[in-house]
Structure formats: structure tokens, C-alpha cells
Length: 175
Ligand SMILES: [Zn+2]
Ligand SMILES: [Zn+2]
Image (cartoon, rainbow, N blue to C red; front, top):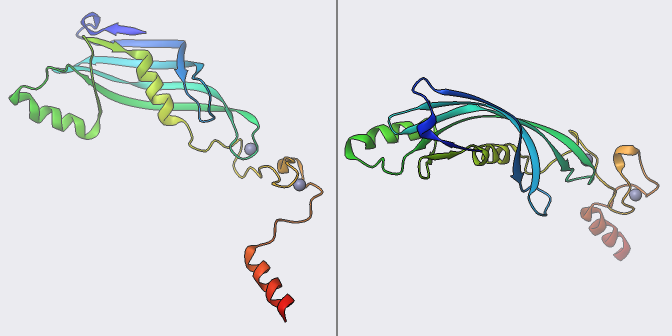
């Protein structure tokens, strides 16, 4: 969804998006997946462009980085981004731009248009976990038999020996 900022009234514009399709490249490799996101968006005109504030929510289907099980991961990300016209380079405006950049993300408007879908995409990506986990303390898979340790212990003998003990065993063997 793309908004022409000339269409935003002086008093601002409140947008509610339901199930907006957003393309995302999820942490597990592969082509970008199409996800659905809901968003609440407030657009306010500023002297240099548009301030976009809001929140995006979605539920992504991720794959656990430890046990490889798919799981649903809810995301809720608040954002505040100042979209500026690229022409905002006049000397008297510079100070104001710097001040705004301190506590706000700043982006530039392309041809006076704001790509709302790209905004949601960026913020969903920010909310993605680097190492997705299906649950806190996921036990992962057994490195020997591949069994899901969350479902209980497998038949394998204990954890692989600590390399330090191997040295001790070798020393014992030499004695
Ligand atoms: Zn897991
Ligand atoms: Zn095992």
C-alpha cells in the first residue's frame, strides 16, 4: 500500500490495516514468504515530510533453530519514523533535521509517496528473532540420534564426553 502524502489532511490521518500482505525473508533460508500483518498507523504532516507512528502485529510461522520444529511466533512492534522530503537540505532546516534524527528513525520520501507496506516490512524484520526458539529452554535435537529431546530422553548414552576428560583418559592410558 502506497500513500500519496499530498492526500494526508493537515489534522493527520489514522489508518487501520488488516491482513496487509507483506513479503518477508524469514531467518531460515529460502525465498521471501508472504505474511499477513495488522497495523495501526498515524500519519502526521511535519514541516519536512510525514511522521509515521504506529504498531504492527503479526504471527509468523518460524522454524526453531534448535529442534527444527515449526512454531507460531507472535510479533508486536511499535515504530516511529520520520519520512522527509529529499529536498530538506536548506541551511535553516538542518538543525531541525538533526534534532529529529536523534530520537527518530529517519527515511526519505520517494516522489512524495510513502510505501506503507515497506514500513511494515522493515518493522517486522526488526522484530524477528535472530535465533528463533519454539520455547524458552528448548532442548533441541540429540546430536547422535536426532531425537527431539523435548519429548523425553533418547536411548543414547549420556552427553558426549567433555574434551577435557578425554585428555585425562589418555593420561590414564599412558600410565
Ligand atoms: Zn525448539
Ligand atoms: Zn539420541
